[in-house]
Image (cartoon, rainbow, N blue to C red; front, side, top):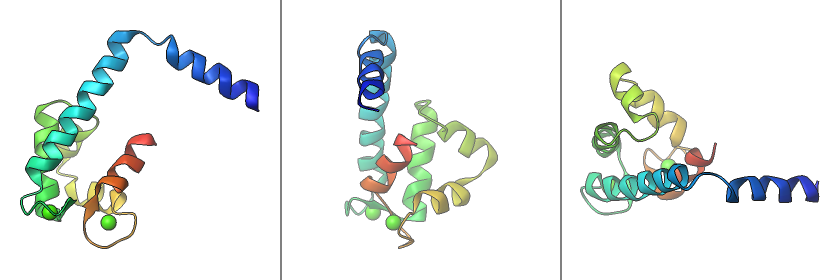
Length: 100
Ligand SMILES: [Ca+2]
Ligand SMILES: [Ca+2]
């Protein structure tokens, strides 16, 4: 168990820089988009704010945002991300989804 975890960690370390840079880049952009979409700056996205967030991410070609936009699946994506069902998406809920 422990060994396989070390092997996995090593595999991450030797991953090509181009790919990890890209991921890091996307994360930074997504963070920026989150802040811009969060109109009232309460660090949570309502459905309307989330829509803007997805559109901005789609423009930047981040994750599955373009697909969500193409299919108009905002509501579905929102429901899936809103883990605690409070009707808003916070940074933790987003991060948890990003790890899946
Ligand atoms: Ca907000
Ligand atoms: Ca929530």
